[in-house]
Image 1 (cartoon, rainbow, N blue to C red):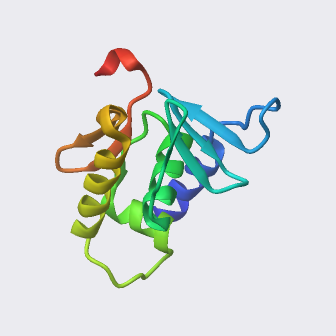
Image 2 (image 1 turned 180 degrees about the vertical axis):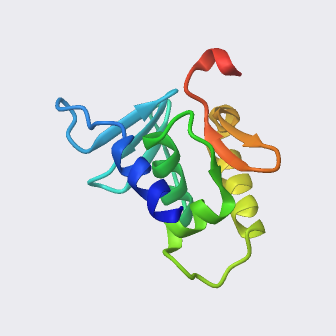
Length: 122
C-alpha cells in the first residue's frame, strides 16, 4: 500500500512554472525550491528544515489528505524514530509562522492534514 501511495504522489505533483523555474506559489505562499526559501505575501518566512519540507510537500499536492505517518516518511524518510504527534507540533509552528495563510493548512480529523486547493474552501 505504501508503494501505491508513493506512486500516486509522484504522479500528482504540481508542475513548476517555466517563467520562475524552481518556484511554487499557492494562496500567496511562495516557495523558491532552488534557494530553499519561503515567502508569504512577499515577506520572507524563517522555517525550520522540517517545516519547509512539510510546506513544500503540501503545496505540491493541494487537496490531498496525508496521514501523519506519510508526512513523517516524506520529511524524515522511512523508519524515522519519531511519534506521529511530532507532526502536529510542526504543523502548529508552521501555521503560526504563515500567519493568516496558515489557515490554508487544514486538519482532517482522524486522518491528517491537507493544503486547501481553493481560497473558497476557508
